[in-house]
Length: 290
Image (cartoon, rainbow, N blue to C red; front, side):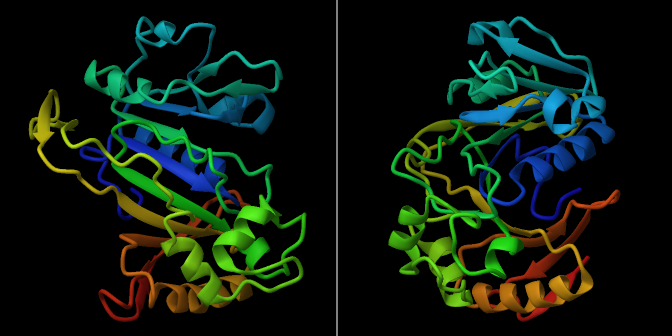
């Protein structure tokens, strides 16, 4: 399974950023399904229809809703992957489901895990969120912030950074500048950056975890706000040279980012995905493992 994610406890996982959200969530969906879990992959904004992005052969069904209530009445098969969204004017895409829906579906035990793309990036490798982003689902336990190495190894242009004005406002960088570890640390740690959480978990909320038997789910109430786990995914490290550079870059960033729970280096460009965990040197000392 993915380091930093406990499928029994981390029932709702959201991904933001740019440079590999879709690939990561699709990979995670496959792993969860192979372990016998029933998975819903959806969005609160927009995603491409699986017939368009090549994921159709890996899933069991697609639900294109005109009313979100349809998802309550559609029982999935065990150990399956469902891709769902609302009907979109663009037939190549699915629009977002309501942000409160994933928690309700978990409460009704319709799915073991729900994976949500919570913002868009126009397929560019870097971004900063606008004032309306991200659209995070209620009750999420993990927030995966994604950045693409293709944007880091190149100067800032319209072809590398989505929402450049917001990116500049957060990092202080402008068009033509290079992405430094210091600037990435700012993007990661800023309340307006990669892990922006516009609406924190409510003071009293429910978490649904599998009981030790693995067959039933129990409701646990928390009286205090519970921070989500933050996973930084540095993607697009497709060559050995890029992986070596990415490791060094990530360690510099993490030295100033103690709030990051887990850091993953990744590549999804080849037949077999590659992932490597980097331990945060500010917490554990310098180390990495595949």
